[in-house]
Length: 489
Image (tube, rainbow, N blue to C red; front, side, top):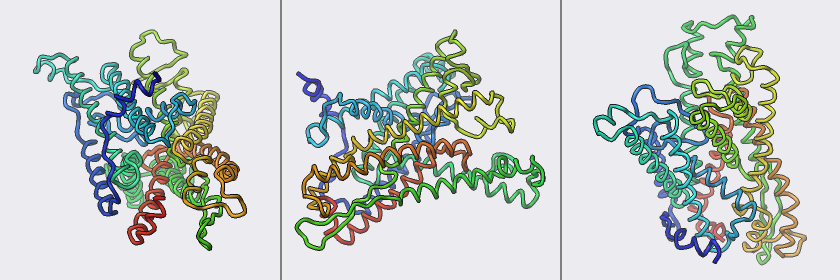
């Protein structure tokens, strides 16, 4: 008996959201999407019962919040982290052909979806248990423990139970959006989190001269409420471009927007014609960012899990050698885990402006490791993403064949179409994945408005662009029902 036969009774009984029967009207899709978005914002503002108030442990996921969503201390503490980690495991197993699942087979599709849900539950436990019971990430309320008479261990158990429920909720919220809404839940939650940071970075009006947004700060500079150095001096220029003025952060943010939108429009269009309808023609676009920027979530999540391992070792291993990792106030400051930590801001590498006391040579090695990790990791995960989501040459050739289309000048045969696709898809996939990885590192190094990570900004722009295209497609199909039959074939 193979593993599929042994696991089938469990995997086929995993709870799931029922697929809609027939077409879901566009307005209803928007309603489901908006409802899930409101629920997401609500849950990120519901603090877990039992946490110590005023002086919680630092948010370990703080530097990765842009891509993992969620909120520190809330029901959605873990965000989409378990979903992404489960996807990494499945992609690695599928890439090594260890699962033996054919996603074109309906039975294997059910097993794959059930296995994914089971892995998400496992990852919720593997991530949440150390976070609650190891270290001081989520300190329990001692007063509550005494009043209930269950000890701090019991309060930790209550905190983990809430975290577990939140992790399962976000899993099903993602599934509802994917089946009943527009786009995907994971993309929607990333857009929501990053948009909050961007809006705050532009408009938040705190005490002028403090951490105010870009616009209030410049209003203060113009009115004289915020004092900066003379632009004719090095200190003044640094303050305008790198300090309170945030000019470099604004330029970087606008550049990322422009580059991603341009890259999304760069494509190789393969001409198609209908085999039976004379004059019916079309084009199959192979975009520069063919695999989208979603594989970047997997790369950053892998880095986040490595850093999480370092934090756990630091808390549990009192005599951990300095070469493995050195920590100060919960932040890595040296050792192996410092070298493999991603560059998050200008403060991590601009030694010449006094932002960091690290040696230039060590900083150069860390930047190089981050570049290699993101460029090579982006290319590898882009390949896995294309193969596991039915975007590879073979799957694309079958889709074109089944739609009744063919490439002019070539025989109407799936193998022939696949060979044509192999000239473009693998190369574009690798180039696009590496390009996105490079952009993510450069955006982090230069800084963005609101402190959004470069990866988070890339994801938001790309996902929003694709969401716009999907909404336009949905509206087109609503206006012309015959188009729906063409798209569904």
